[in-house]
Length: 415
Image (cartoon, rainbow, N blue to C red):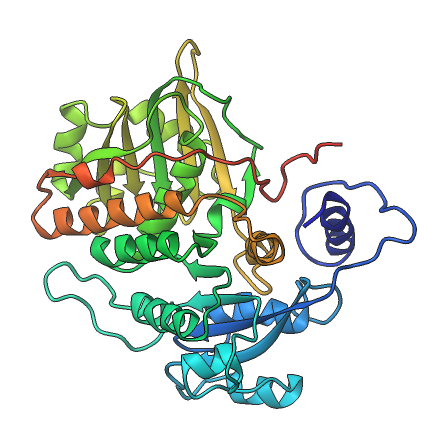
């Protein structure tokens, strides 16, 4: 999206209800929006407040999902893998006159002999799907969706940009296969969490090529589904440091193992406190008592020697925050990744903006390699948790990439 269009949207959104923390100049007179490009959405289910609702719903109903300004996209067709009792897809199809496709190929071709869309969104989150028996990873069919999408591209001789919501499959092999296929077929691709584009309080970006001494990220919730968000929040900050950004090993701790790891120097109480200091409504009391039942810490060893901690501190906080200690600085820098935890879940509007940019330009707003890396880390974490905290080497995660400077929600706009 051009700067003037971004400013137009932000100006209108801040005048409505989106909790935007930026002040934008008035757009130039005569500014026009681009044509709306057609997209296909391939989702597991479409229920109220599901990821399908808060992403695809903003294409249908505007960023506020109450009408008004929205992305320069239109929904050409929707494929839903499951249709539960709370399904919204049928009523929305009648209201907004888009077809419900019986197959993924039909959603992309609209029943013709060619690709009829400018982009495809995979939203493989929510729904009744099994878990792996040992590691309890949710087996959403993201790779299955991707494979059917790329088979359609091959059949009709045309590829278009693809966005995959959240991590690229529950196992590393799926993510790597998806990534390799996107390279082979020259498919512009994005994936990942909404946290990298959410509000940061206070605003925080790290200097390019900085040197980091210590990192600790606070997360909450399910160790896989929400652990992924924590990994993405951390990675979008520390990817700007000097040197390679890959991960060489992963280890985990739960219960009393957390405190043993602390005594062994695997994590720093001062860093945990620095992250807590920027979060509202932190639970009071003894940390060891609060975190004894349903929390886990992930310890990551990075290629450049950095060691970081993801503290899934359930019952201590309901938020995400990252504390970073830079070389030569006395105190860590920290920020709270602020989400809108009720409709319209405004952080997804900023995610949709990044997707919109890729579909219109063919250029990903930020590298898919970030999410390839976090997906691989998460898979190793889940295996470590299932193996009582076992240290797992990850030579396959020597992934390097060049980060971009796509803005987050309250990042000051450059003139």
